[in-house]
Every structure is written in C-alpha cells, then in structure tokens.
Amino acid sequence: MITVIDMLKTAARNYAMYRTTRDEIANLPLDVALDLGIYRGDADRIAREAVYGKAA
Image (cartoon, rainbow, N blue to C red):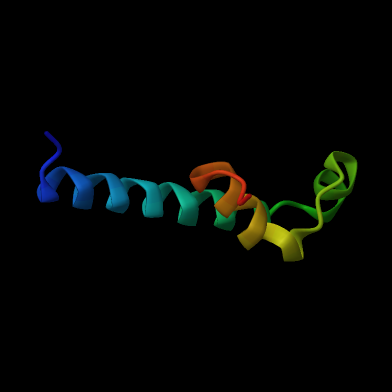
C-alpha cells in the first residue's frame, strides 16, 4: 500500500524533474532549439508532457 509519505516523495521528485526539464528547454541555444524544432516558449508544456504525460 502506498503511503502518503511515498506519494509526497513521488510528487516532489516529479516536480524537480519538471523544473529541470523546463529550465533546460528554455535555456537551449536558439540554433539548437531550431534544429530540434522546439519553440523555447513552449518549455512549460513540453516539460509537463514529458514528466506527467500528455493530457487526454
């Protein structure tokens, strides 16, 4: 059975991963972002989908 503590740890871990991913995408050099087809302004959405999954 998953305890509340385990759920909080998982949520904190996921949020840390989201922030790291978001910051890395937002700080990509422009030429790299363009090569990858990424708009840096979408960093929040891209990171959220990568960590939490795509919303239905």
